[in-house]
Length: 449
Image (spheres, rainbow, N blue to C red):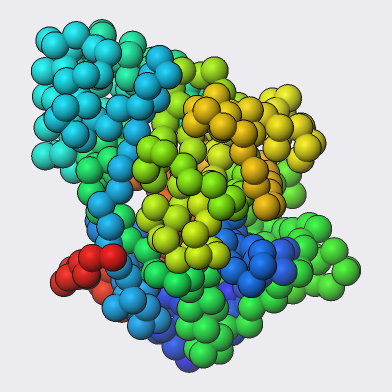
């Protein structure tokens, strides 16, 4: 019996993972539509002076089973090297590494609050299931396991940096899951000599194309056509119509709802997106102190955080270069900073650099990327939308808006695609080898950088 035809809207990581999951089970009539020149979405890259750089910071986490599984499938996992990174908090014009005992003792917070903070982190590290905190806030979680002082000094600034929201409006389940990942104290992975997200995206494209998937880039969707309780076709900006038995939407929910306002699937319209500005530059200046990730919780800077990408991967650019990534999270794309010109943003981030490092930034180049729909805002009571439309019986949903409470990452996007691929296969009476592979994956070694 022939397998159904499938059209995937969006060639980001979730869309590529859906296509691969189905193609591994013998599905061959699969088309992935991507409006950009290259697949990969938020994991995309750009090139300068013969070197490839990520659009924004990305790192490999040792608990990110879907990501590690896919790297293994494309034979890239043996190339991954692991490095202990340094995460700094900049408070009152001083830098603190909270994973270092001396810095933790120096950190401007009372001793009792430090004990409470240690208890909170112990609870987060030892607990993986935070489902009972879905209807509670980050503020409630911190005050339950720590104290008001810990919330005010550490977590109120961090939820403002991430979502421009107080901790009382942010999901406690998300914060618990985020702390469980231990990003500040675990080794991060990269692929030396290149930008590893380029390796990932190119490898995924090879995997799906080798299985017969039709990937169409530079292909914008202008409309979606419905016929009763089914989607009949998507219309491209060229006027071409593509018909399929099954459609998978990985595009932002607001874009999907604009084209199909009649779809009332629970949770779909409630998703609100934050926006992101990511500016990367290269300089031959020596930057002290050494760090990979610097949080700026004072809220007095244009950037929310600064990443020194060469600290994780010294070979990411030209020998001797520092590769700096300024990142700003915004509550939505309508905030004034999102509309600033490249020149204005370059000046704002250069001013941040001078205030923090005490010298003028002398970049060889700046690359500025604006992401209007970056990640779902994980409010208190946030719930993932359903994976299958309740209005159209041949429509499924995958993407980073369905990965709560996991942190939004390359792996969670891939995992969302695998989950939906598995669901489609189950509805057609088939098992799912990729899902089994992800669930059974174990990282056997972590060769150091």
